[in-house]
Image (cartoon, rainbow, N blue to C red; front, side, top):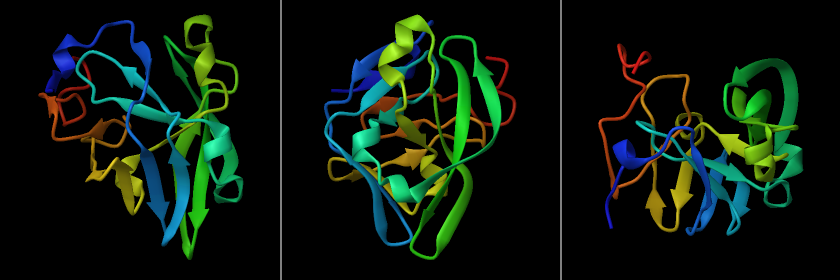
Length: 154
């Protein structure tokens, strides 16, 4: 079944991810989950949030800096360290998300373009264009996707 990101709602929907999620860096699986959540927002590929129990805690280190999402609240960032790799601010989460997004508490989202590979089942995902958003693009998604130069004001 094909999904159009233009059918996703605003404010974003929070739904279970029905696919097996795997994130790899430096030859190490840093996240492996069958209980992840998807955030679906108009014009964006889904962002995948992995529950803390399914993230290798030794691979994520909290770092300084925050950002604000009008829907989810204040995000904090993590360096992802595995094997001989360290990717700076390559993951984020919401330690105290806004009410409708409470289920995201302490989950971790990874920028797929900064990892060696991110997988949904057996499909290697593509990264959302640009360096701000962290959407996961799969073959069953239709765009265009926000993130390319000139699309930030969409």
